[in-house]
Length: 417
Ligand code: FA5
Ligand code: MG
Image 1 (tube, rainbow, N blue to C red):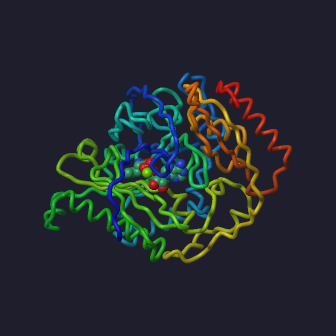
Image 2: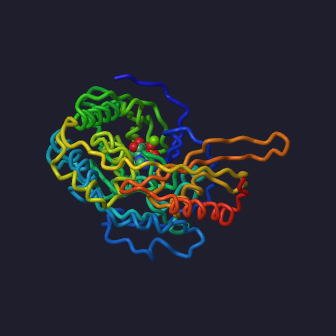
Image 3: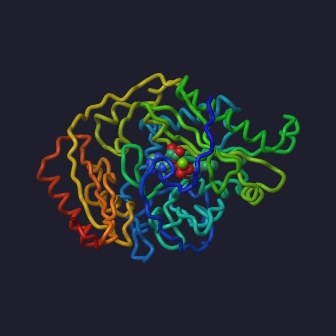
């Protein structure tokens, strides 16, 4: 397997490291909160709990609607199916039940769990309200399942898999969605294990990590082209990302590495070593089932859901492939404006998603120039509308576009061109 050199990667959490886009980072203004019990089960998240009048609150109705879906708990949903296939792999590869599995940890977590416990620096861009959904200053919708690492270690778990819905304010396209699912894996080693293996603690953890994950990918896909890329995460060192060749491109499917010693010492006691990984379930499911658009995971359309049943996927990439039922044409609308100080692409995407919901397929920057004389910067974004379920009418799209333009001029105080 090829290994590619380290890119100048940071860990923005967001899509910035999966693709090139023009962004303006927000600033951090966070403080430390009291820890919430990590393995309190999900239960129902109420609207009052996450949409509040707190000045920090930036959870939208659109996001609230995603909160209790728990697709990963539905054995017939593509995400539930992939979850089970991965759980089965770990049970086959290691002793049955050796890895404890969690699929019902609450997605509303403290900033301490989401950031501090995994050593995310105070000024890190992922803490910005431009990138993360805040309930209040000390509470967020988790933006990764790594939020549970420290707590589960403290509860005494040394080999575990933890899956759940995660939330990020992000740009919009076919492989990025503001709500998606991750699976976290952690495995702790004792001194006797690296002594028996005749290598250092880091060598053992890295070797076992890559072995487990390469095995998992082969179990899922059969033979597939994959490569390791050096990466950066605040909570692991060394760190890697695994990419799979899909539809002519390298698609990043997971991040991983050797856990930072401070996290491990605090959680499991000193003298140990551990690996950790976090993978994106939608990305794997899209490749395995040929699902072309990430919005489909949220549809109620029977023509989608009825194509999948528990057990319909067999290891090695054999089994159900999604039969597309939607060839409805897209509708494109461009909007140009002068960029102002507070403008961010994430804010635009959030607003557009709020108005257009899942009819919005993508929001893409197609032109960016600065007027030499005035120094003013102009952006043009293309909004692609397409329904997975039906043909759209001109009137409804014009109506949505008008609302979006009005919100850009109003809420976002932008001067349209
Ligand atoms: C993380 O979230 C780290 N917590 C992963 C990790 C865990 C590293 C443990 C080391 C140790 P990242 O932001 O790259 O990393 O996201 C992990 C995966 O989530 C990505 O590889 C991708 O598969 C998926 N992902 C990220 N953003 C999105 C998105 N907007 N929509 C769908 N999937 C996404
Ligand atoms: Mg990444």
